[in-house]
Image (tube, rainbow, N blue to C red; front, top):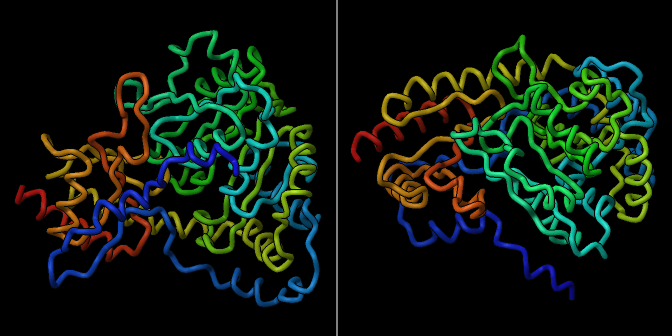
Length: 398
């Protein structure tokens, strides 16, 4: 048995279930779940049609590298979205969802015999980064993202002897749970440290297409690299997903793009990993990457929800509008822990949110998620409005 399995901590939603297991919610109110970031907008009909039109793909083993049509569609979308020239199918690989890629890339980039290996992660964070590091034989090193540092990964306090041990840095922009977007200066700093200390940068960009200013798309790592004269994308892998962009979380479709040398090693690993995407899913994925109209409409729905929720809740619970993604990351009322707020909100308003401390680890003297909750506005506008009204009433009664 792999002894490192014992290092894995319970997943945040497992902890949430235990927290609320003995709590009886208010009667007469239907449950509204704002805890999990599962997109619930309808899947676009043209994607469903592409699936059913290509069911013959189920009759053949798919290639680990994916079809040329899919890789070209991914490369084309990445190039259009990020203003890149010269990006080809050699720079990209399809993934069975970005989650699968974010986990498995650690197996490629980390020497399991390297007892000194560290993996940098933001804190709060997507718990998969931690699990990927631990099961690859490395130790996580957390960079706290707090209001005091602008919710950004602050590298200034990382000692040189720590940086020398870093093999991989996970970054997430737009961030989960804060919605913070990294600017060009932040990318310049990360790339400079990568060059100096030789670590790989894995950029989780699964929320890149959920933003609120239609004329101001979030800067991506590949675009930042190109602007900084790094068109070889050395030591950089960006990962994206159709789950949020196209409302197909069950399709499990995403991509990795970046350094061709790393892509070559990643493909070698994946031929053994056994995660090749079905030909049926590949065809539907190519159709999704080649269409942008449904993504614009998706963003319109999120803007409508976030605006309505803010107007109702902000007078009683201070909200900060995120730059992107579909979460509000908000402090709990004074004197209430994030767990206490979560329990009482469920009990009195039958609404589930996620305690911020469940998305964080104690590091450098604090738990940066403590005293915050994550609110996921992934359902309908009507659900968002009803939830906002209940939360406002709940806060008024405190």
